[in-house]
Length: 190
Image 1 (cartoon, helix red, strand yellow):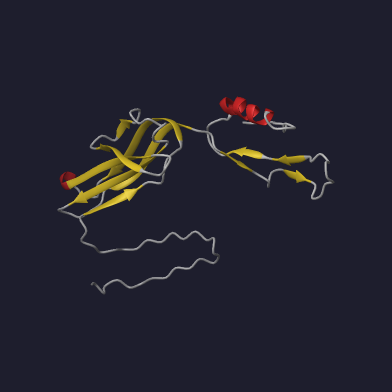
Image 2 (cartoon, one colour):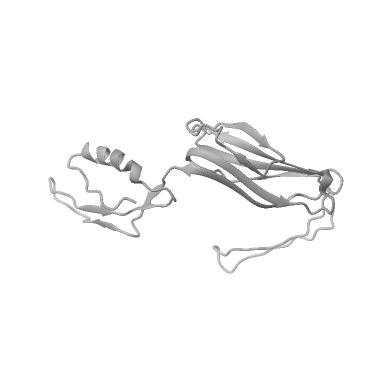
């Protein structure tokens, strides 16, 4: 065990402070991995794009692969493809009904110089499903008490938090609301 590293503590002024700190780590590992967050859910997967550079003047000893992992609705992950050396590739072969979510894992190895590939970005293009949240901070209105049998007037904002619109889902929402008695009023679903 090396004792050359001096432990460092960095504390922000608030518990919500963002801390950006660099550390020099002397290691002899020749391989490693970078894992993306989960992408999705998607209606259709279209493409993967990634870029990076080598820290070596002659990067012939660098090996870089990107694994594409499909994640089923029950959470089970399956390795679907290994992308190397291509940096732009189609993901149209992935059935989004089976794998609505995916994750990427970049595998790096350099047995000579032990320098990791410097990732610039990983991008996944897809037709993502719309996602929304209820937003009581925007609108919430309801009396705190009512009499038995009295009609309740209730208002609650809904906000789209995705880049995909909810227009194709309005019919499904309308069918749901019409099955309720009395049906709630839907306004401005975007």
